[in-house]
Length: 152
Length: 152
Image (cartoon, rainbow over all chains, first blue to last red; front, top):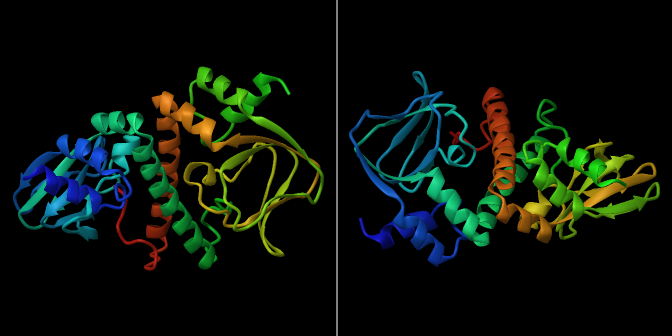
Protein backbone atom coordinates (compact mmCIF):
# COMPACT_ATOMS: atom_id res chain seq x y z
CA UNK A 1 0.00 0.00 0.00
CA UNK A 2 1.31 3.45 -0.85
CA UNK A 3 2.18 5.87 1.94
CA UNK A 4 -0.20 8.39 0.40
CA UNK A 5 -3.06 5.88 0.65
CA UNK A 6 -2.34 5.46 4.36
CA UNK A 7 -2.28 9.23 4.79
CA UNK A 8 -5.68 9.49 3.10
CA UNK A 9 -7.14 6.84 5.41
CA UNK A 10 -5.83 8.70 8.47
CA UNK A 11 -7.18 11.99 7.15
CA UNK A 12 -10.65 10.47 6.61
CA UNK A 13 -10.87 9.51 10.29
CA UNK A 14 -12.61 11.48 12.97
CA UNK A 15 -9.47 11.58 15.12
CA UNK A 16 -6.97 12.80 12.54
CA UNK A 17 -9.11 14.99 10.29
CA UNK A 18 -7.44 18.16 11.60
CA UNK A 19 -3.91 16.83 11.91
CA UNK A 20 -1.33 18.60 9.68
CA UNK A 21 -0.25 16.63 6.61
CA UNK A 22 3.37 16.42 7.73
CA UNK A 23 2.31 14.67 10.95
CA UNK A 24 0.00 12.35 9.06
CA UNK A 25 2.95 11.25 6.92
CA UNK A 26 4.84 10.44 10.13
CA UNK A 27 1.91 8.48 11.51
CA UNK A 28 1.31 6.68 8.20
CA UNK A 29 4.90 5.48 8.26
CA UNK A 30 4.36 3.52 11.48
CA UNK A 31 1.07 1.87 10.45
CA UNK A 32 1.31 -1.90 10.07
CA UNK A 33 -0.73 -3.54 7.30
CA UNK A 34 -2.72 -6.62 8.32
CA UNK A 35 -4.54 -9.03 6.00
CA UNK A 36 -7.28 -11.06 7.69
CA UNK A 37 -9.44 -13.94 6.46
CA UNK A 38 -13.25 -13.93 6.87
CA UNK A 39 -14.38 -14.93 10.39
CA UNK A 40 -10.95 -14.20 11.85
CA UNK A 41 -10.81 -12.91 15.42
CA UNK A 42 -9.10 -9.51 15.75
CA UNK A 43 -9.44 -9.25 19.53
CA UNK A 44 -11.70 -10.57 22.27
CA UNK A 45 -13.66 -8.84 25.00
CA UNK A 46 -11.39 -8.45 28.03
CA UNK A 47 -8.13 -8.39 26.04
CA UNK A 48 -5.78 -5.61 27.04
CA UNK A 49 -5.95 -3.07 24.22
CA UNK A 50 -2.80 -1.18 23.23
CA UNK A 51 -3.54 -0.47 19.60
CA UNK A 52 -6.22 0.75 17.24
CA UNK A 53 -7.08 -0.27 13.69
CA UNK A 54 -8.20 1.56 10.56
CA UNK A 55 -10.29 -0.52 8.17
CA UNK A 56 -8.87 -0.08 4.67
CA UNK A 57 -11.18 -2.62 3.03
CA UNK A 58 -13.58 -5.16 4.49
CA UNK A 59 -16.04 -5.57 7.33
CA UNK A 60 -15.52 -6.13 11.04
CA UNK A 61 -18.26 -7.23 13.41
CA UNK A 62 -18.14 -5.81 16.96
CA UNK A 63 -19.89 -8.29 19.21
CA UNK A 64 -20.43 -9.60 22.72
CA UNK A 65 -20.74 -13.34 22.26
CA UNK A 66 -23.38 -13.84 19.58
CA UNK A 67 -24.88 -10.37 20.03
CA UNK A 68 -23.72 -7.96 17.31
CA UNK A 69 -23.19 -4.40 18.53
CA UNK A 70 -22.03 -2.93 15.23
CA UNK A 71 -20.63 -3.73 11.80
CA UNK A 72 -17.71 -1.50 10.84
CA UNK A 73 -16.62 -0.96 7.24
CA UNK A 74 -14.11 0.84 5.00
CA UNK A 75 -12.58 3.92 6.67
CA UNK A 76 -14.04 3.07 10.09
CA UNK A 77 -11.82 2.85 13.17
CA UNK A 78 -11.73 -0.08 15.56
CA UNK A 79 -10.56 0.28 19.16
CA UNK A 80 -9.66 3.96 19.18
CA UNK A 81 -10.09 4.42 22.93
CA UNK A 82 -7.80 1.56 23.86
CA UNK A 83 -4.81 3.13 22.13
CA UNK A 84 -5.34 6.14 24.38
CA UNK A 85 -6.11 4.58 27.75
CA UNK A 86 -4.86 0.95 27.55
CA UNK A 87 -8.09 -0.34 29.08
CA UNK A 88 -9.32 -3.82 28.25
CA UNK A 89 -11.56 -4.28 25.20
CA UNK A 90 -15.23 -3.90 26.05
CA UNK A 91 -16.34 -6.11 23.14
CA UNK A 92 -14.90 -8.60 20.65
CA UNK A 93 -14.04 -7.90 17.00
CA UNK A 94 -14.23 -10.50 14.23
CA UNK A 95 -13.94 -10.03 10.47
CA UNK A 96 -16.92 -10.79 8.23
CA UNK A 97 -15.17 -10.63 4.83
CA UNK A 98 -11.51 -10.63 3.85
CA UNK A 99 -10.30 -7.48 5.54
CA UNK A 100 -7.28 -5.22 5.22
CA UNK A 101 -6.46 -3.25 8.36
CA UNK A 102 -3.87 -0.68 9.34
CA UNK A 103 -2.67 -1.16 12.90
CA UNK A 104 -1.45 1.75 15.03
CA UNK A 105 0.42 0.87 18.24
CA UNK A 106 0.16 2.99 21.36
CA UNK A 107 3.83 3.77 21.93
CA UNK A 108 4.74 5.40 18.59
CA UNK A 109 1.37 7.11 18.60
CA UNK A 110 2.08 8.71 21.99
CA UNK A 111 5.54 9.69 20.81
CA UNK A 112 4.14 11.59 17.83
CA UNK A 113 1.41 13.11 19.99
CA UNK A 114 3.91 14.36 22.58
CA UNK A 115 6.07 15.97 19.92
CA UNK A 116 3.31 17.79 18.13
CA UNK A 117 0.78 19.94 19.90
CA UNK A 118 -1.46 19.95 16.79
CA UNK A 119 -1.87 16.18 16.87
CA UNK A 120 -2.59 16.32 20.60
CA UNK A 121 -5.13 19.11 20.14
CA UNK A 122 -6.82 17.12 17.36
CA UNK A 123 -7.22 14.11 19.66
CA UNK A 124 -8.43 16.17 22.61
CA UNK A 125 -10.87 18.12 20.44
CA UNK A 126 -12.30 14.90 19.08
CA UNK A 127 -12.76 13.36 22.54
CA UNK A 128 -14.27 16.57 23.93
CA UNK A 129 -16.61 16.90 20.94
CA UNK A 130 -17.86 13.37 21.48
CA UNK A 131 -18.46 14.08 25.17
CA UNK A 132 -20.30 17.29 24.34
CA UNK A 133 -22.48 15.46 21.79
CA UNK A 134 -23.30 12.70 24.28
CA UNK A 135 -23.94 15.31 26.97
CA UNK A 136 -26.34 17.16 24.66
CA UNK A 137 -28.16 13.96 23.86
CA UNK A 138 -28.39 12.98 27.51
CA UNK A 139 -29.88 16.39 28.30
CA UNK A 140 -32.25 16.17 25.31
CA UNK A 141 -33.56 12.84 26.43
CA UNK A 142 -33.85 13.91 30.09
CA UNK A 143 -32.13 10.67 30.97
CA UNK A 144 -31.77 11.16 34.72
CA UNK A 145 -29.35 8.30 35.18
CA UNK A 146 -26.70 9.85 32.93
CA UNK A 147 -24.23 12.24 34.58
CA UNK A 148 -26.13 15.32 35.76
CA UNK A 149 -23.16 17.68 35.64
CA UNK A 150 -22.93 19.36 32.25
CA UNK A 151 -19.53 19.72 30.66
CA UNK A 152 -19.17 23.46 30.05
CA UNK B 1 -3.73 29.99 49.95
CA UNK B 2 -0.85 27.56 50.48
CA UNK B 3 0.63 25.75 47.49
CA UNK B 4 -0.06 22.46 49.24
CA UNK B 5 -3.76 23.34 49.49
CA UNK B 6 -3.85 23.94 45.76
CA UNK B 7 -2.10 20.61 45.16
CA UNK B 8 -4.72 18.85 47.29
CA UNK B 9 -7.55 20.44 45.32
CA UNK B 10 -5.98 19.32 42.04
CA UNK B 11 -5.44 15.83 43.41
CA UNK B 12 -9.09 15.56 44.48
CA UNK B 13 -10.25 16.21 40.91
CA UNK B 14 -11.23 13.55 38.43
CA UNK B 15 -8.76 14.87 35.85
CA UNK B 16 -5.63 15.03 38.01
CA UNK B 17 -6.17 12.17 40.43
CA UNK B 18 -3.42 10.09 38.79
CA UNK B 19 -1.00 12.92 38.04
CA UNK B 20 2.39 12.62 39.84
CA UNK B 21 2.84 14.96 42.81
CA UNK B 22 5.75 16.79 41.20
CA UNK B 23 3.57 17.74 38.22
CA UNK B 24 0.73 18.80 40.51
CA UNK B 25 3.10 21.21 42.25
CA UNK B 26 3.93 22.69 38.84
CA UNK B 27 0.26 23.03 37.95
CA UNK B 28 -0.64 24.43 41.39
CA UNK B 29 1.94 27.17 40.88
CA UNK B 30 0.09 28.54 37.85
CA UNK B 31 -3.40 28.50 39.38
CA UNK B 32 -4.89 31.95 39.85
CA UNK B 33 -7.04 32.55 42.96
CA UNK B 34 -10.35 34.31 42.33
CA UNK B 35 -12.74 35.67 44.97
CA UNK B 36 -16.31 36.14 43.77
CA UNK B 37 -19.38 37.72 45.38
CA UNK B 38 -22.75 35.93 45.49
CA UNK B 39 -24.70 36.18 42.21
CA UNK B 40 -21.56 37.08 40.28
CA UNK B 41 -21.33 35.89 36.68
CA UNK B 42 -18.31 33.67 35.98
CA UNK B 43 -19.02 33.17 32.28
CA UNK B 44 -22.00 33.19 29.93
CA UNK B 45 -23.30 30.68 27.44
CA UNK B 46 -21.57 31.29 24.10
CA UNK B 47 -18.40 32.80 25.63
CA UNK B 48 -15.19 31.41 24.18
CA UNK B 49 -13.76 29.16 26.89
CA UNK B 50 -10.01 29.01 27.37
CA UNK B 51 -9.81 28.13 31.04
CA UNK B 52 -11.25 25.88 33.72
CA UNK B 53 -11.97 26.50 37.40
CA UNK B 54 -11.66 24.45 40.57
CA UNK B 55 -14.14 25.41 43.31
CA UNK B 56 -12.17 25.79 46.55
CA UNK B 57 -15.14 27.01 48.58
CA UNK B 58 -18.63 28.09 47.58
CA UNK B 59 -21.38 27.23 45.13
CA UNK B 60 -21.70 27.84 41.39
CA UNK B 61 -24.94 27.46 39.48
CA UNK B 62 -24.68 26.17 35.89
CA UNK B 63 -27.67 27.47 34.00
CA UNK B 64 -29.24 28.28 30.66
CA UNK B 65 -31.19 31.46 31.28
CA UNK B 66 -33.34 30.74 34.32
CA UNK B 67 -33.12 26.98 33.96
CA UNK B 68 -30.61 25.46 36.41
CA UNK B 69 -28.67 22.52 34.98
CA UNK B 70 -26.49 21.85 38.03
CA UNK B 71 -25.17 23.33 41.26
CA UNK B 72 -21.44 22.74 41.72
CA UNK B 73 -19.72 22.88 45.11
CA UNK B 74 -16.38 22.53 46.92
CA UNK B 75 -13.85 20.46 44.91
CA UNK B 76 -16.00 20.43 41.79
CA UNK B 77 -14.59 21.54 38.44
CA UNK B 78 -16.21 24.11 36.17
CA UNK B 79 -15.52 24.23 32.43
CA UNK B 80 -13.04 21.38 32.14
CA UNK B 81 -13.72 20.65 28.48
CA UNK B 82 -13.18 24.23 27.34
CA UNK B 83 -9.59 24.26 28.59
CA UNK B 84 -8.97 21.30 26.32
CA UNK B 85 -10.84 22.21 23.15
CA UNK B 86 -11.43 26.00 23.30
CA UNK B 87 -15.06 25.59 22.30
CA UNK B 88 -17.63 28.12 23.43
CA UNK B 89 -19.38 27.60 26.76
CA UNK B 90 -22.53 25.52 26.42
CA UNK B 91 -24.10 27.08 29.54
CA UNK B 92 -23.65 30.02 31.90
CA UNK B 93 -22.06 29.90 35.36
CA UNK B 94 -23.05 32.21 38.24
CA UNK B 95 -22.04 32.05 41.89
CA UNK B 96 -24.70 31.41 44.56
CA UNK B 97 -22.60 32.17 47.68
CA UNK B 98 -19.28 33.91 48.11
CA UNK B 99 -16.98 31.63 46.15
CA UNK B 100 -13.24 31.05 45.97
CA UNK B 101 -12.07 29.59 42.68
CA UNK B 102 -8.75 28.49 41.25
CA UNK B 103 -8.42 29.36 37.59
CA UNK B 104 -6.30 27.29 35.20
CA UNK B 105 -5.53 28.84 31.82
CA UNK B 106 -5.20 26.75 28.68
CA UNK B 107 -1.72 27.75 27.57
CA UNK B 108 0.31 26.85 30.69
CA UNK B 109 -1.84 23.77 31.08
CA UNK B 110 -0.95 22.58 27.56
CA UNK B 111 2.69 23.35 28.21
CA UNK B 112 2.77 21.11 31.28
CA UNK B 113 0.80 18.43 29.48
CA UNK B 114 3.20 18.41 26.51
CA UNK B 115 6.20 18.09 28.78
CA UNK B 116 4.89 15.24 30.87
CA UNK B 117 3.44 12.10 29.39
CA UNK B 118 1.91 11.14 32.76
CA UNK B 119 -0.21 14.29 32.87
CA UNK B 120 -1.29 13.70 29.29
CA UNK B 121 -2.15 10.06 29.99
CA UNK B 122 -4.17 11.14 33.04
CA UNK B 123 -6.24 13.54 30.95
CA UNK B 124 -6.75 11.07 28.11
CA UNK B 125 -7.67 8.27 30.52
CA UNK B 126 -10.24 10.51 32.18
CA UNK B 127 -11.83 11.53 28.88
CA UNK B 128 -11.85 7.94 27.60
CA UNK B 129 -13.32 6.66 30.88
CA UNK B 130 -16.14 9.17 30.62
CA UNK B 131 -16.84 8.15 27.03
CA UNK B 132 -16.85 4.48 28.00
CA UNK B 133 -19.26 5.17 30.87
CA UNK B 134 -21.60 7.14 28.62
CA UNK B 135 -21.30 4.44 25.95
CA UNK B 136 -22.23 1.76 28.49
CA UNK B 137 -25.21 3.79 29.61
CA UNK B 138 -26.35 4.42 26.05
CA UNK B 139 -26.16 0.69 25.34
CA UNK B 140 -27.97 -0.13 28.60
CA UNK B 141 -30.82 2.15 27.73
CA UNK B 142 -31.02 0.95 24.10
CA UNK B 143 -31.11 4.58 23.09
CA UNK B 144 -31.04 4.17 19.33
CA UNK B 145 -30.36 7.83 18.64
CA UNK B 146 -27.03 7.79 20.47
CA UNK B 147 -23.97 6.80 18.40
CA UNK B 148 -24.34 3.16 17.38
CA UNK B 149 -20.62 2.44 17.12
CA UNK B 150 -19.26 1.19 20.43
CA UNK B 151 -15.88 2.47 21.55
CA UNK B 152 -13.79 -0.65 22.03
